[in-house]
Amino acid sequence: MSIKFVICLNKQGALRLIRLFEPFSGDANSSQSTIAQIYKLISSRDHRHQSNFVEFSDSTKLVYKRYAGLYFVMGVGLQDEELIYLSHIHLLVEVLDAFFGNVCELDIVFNFHKAYMILDELIIGGEIQETCKDVILERVNYLDRLS
Image 1: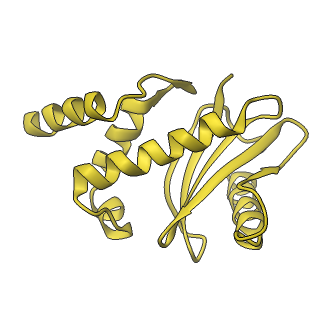
Image 2: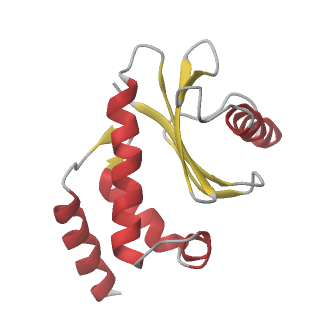
Image 3: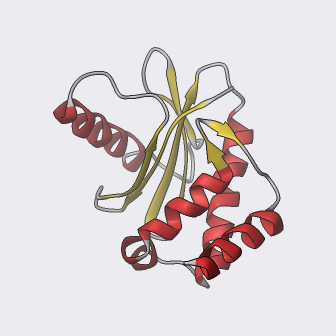
């Protein structure tokens, strides 16, 4: 069980956060094309009648959730359990919300280094590191006071 990537996109498809644990195949233009394909796939789905899981490639499944104007997407292996990753997306959003106080897209844009710090407390090297919201908040608040 490992996470291949974590992406945060807005409703227009603009990239807000990205953490790749396995590189996309190809060059930089191919990476932009892959992100555009991911956005096109998840934004076109009917969120009321379809699940938050979709097969993306021969080896990757997308687990995603839309919160307000942002899509949070994890690329995982085809055999991995989707609900585990969906709960970690929710945990990420809860921690962002608690840290920023009702997080919005502008918080992520203007404080991206803090958003990446939170993401790194949850996931390192494609592996889930921490699952307790209080522990994560304690760590990131301590790190925030240091800077």
